[in-house]
Image (cartoon, rainbow, N blue to C red; front, side, top):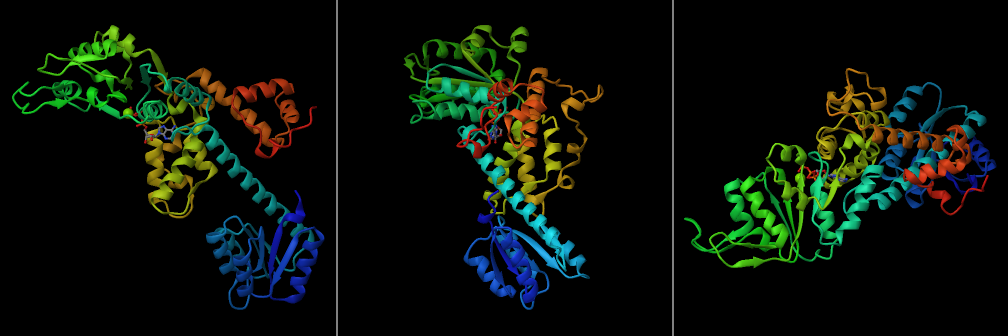
Amino acid sequence: MDRSHASILVIEDESAVRQGLQDILVAEGYEVETAADGETGLELVKEQPFDLVLTDLALPGLGGMDILKYLVHHQPDCLCIIVTGYGSIKNAVASMRLGAFDYLAKPVDPQELRLVVRRALEHRRLKWENLHLKKQLNRRFGFANMVGMSEAIIQVFDLIKKVADTDSTVLILGESGTGKELIAHAIHYNSSRREGPLIPVNCAAIPQELLESELFGHERGAFTHAVRKRLGRFEQATGGTIFLDEIGSMSQALQEKILRVLQDRAFERIGGTKTIRVDIRILAATNQDLDKLMRRGRFREDLYYRLNVIPIKVPPLRERVSDIPLLVQHFLQEFSRKQKKPLKRLSPAALDLLSHYPWPGNVRELENLLERLVTLSEGELVEVADLPDKFKRHPSAAALGPRDFPEQGVNLTAAVQEFEKDLILKALAKTDWVKSRAAALLHLNRTTLLEKMKKRHILPKPDQVSRPEKPS
Ligand SMILES: Nc1ncnc2c1ncn2[C@@H]1O[C@H](COP(=O)(O)OP(=O)(O)OP(=O)(O)O)[C@@H](O)[C@H]1O
Ligand SMILES: [Mg+2]
């Protein structure tokens, strides 16, 4: 890295030590400022951002711990290294717990100083790049409030983009909590009907005897309580989209009536004779297995084929494990913002456990967990101990023993794709994204690696976008 760009503040009251530290760091090519006491140091920090602060622990007045606390809370990008005399190692350890990057014991060994400072700046650079990469991923893979970067979800995003601006009926299939409703919204708001209404109807939540009048409306006097005419949801959706959610729960009688709306966009209100024509787009969703319902005679075949013009299958979360870190980040940001709390992080070990859990409740379960963690966990870092016990018992798909093989099964193709992506990312990280070296590590030639990266949607590292690698 270009060292001359790193700026360091040294806070030390003993002038000889201060001068010594400054000389070593200047010789290394850093820009160095100094302060002889904590108050001056804090003023400098407030005036201009430093990349790194090196502070003595025991200063007259404002001490090293106070400087550290200020930095951790107000300038988390600036790292802090504590310098301490013999005898106060215990304090130094406490400072690490508070968030110091490292500590150095006096008399400071020049070699050690150079090393620790270099490591700190490197750490800072990686952290920044990581953040930048995540932002870039979010921008690229976020779609209408949906985040995800797995092979499977990108296919879903692509399909949404393709069908959104048509009038085709779309059937959204997926387990509970996979994001079916979010997809219906994405389709409507990316269509030319976006200015029109989006009318959701939850066919499972409304009693079937009421559902008919809810959908079709009724004329005045159609039944005992029909004191005035009422427009149904189909009519309310005119110019927009109707979203028939939980379509698998609809009664046989209603299924037949819906069929006609699908075919002709026409119906009569209950108790009416006039045929009403509506200009609507129809979206439907279910978490039930419609094939099975059809075989059992509980879902009409003709309706199924009318609805199933364009199916969008949303894969369960356990088949797109690479979405988990992005979703975690997304929900941590959302809940921290909503609850006005500082942004929390998950320890790598905790994230690893979440990646190995089968998520029967899918994204909703993950969302609920993170809301709970943001609300309940103390401190900024969420660790394994903060997670409920159920997360601590699930091995990864690759490490499954015959007995813990999940009831719902494992999608082999998806698991292999995830494994491949994971391994490629690790090889790239190991070789600092030098693709020829990563390819060698994976026993592939460079072209094959590039093809796989493209296929698995692995982006080049951000700082390489403008500085392409020399062909090897
Ligand atoms: N890819 C995603 N990115 C961000 N949030 C998501 C994503 N997928 C789902 N969610 C969130 O997860 C929760 C559940 O999603 P949604 O209600 O769309 O699921 P569903 O499939 O309709 O579930 P159900 O079958 O239980 O009705 C919602 O709060 C939604 O915002
Ligand atoms: Mg839903």
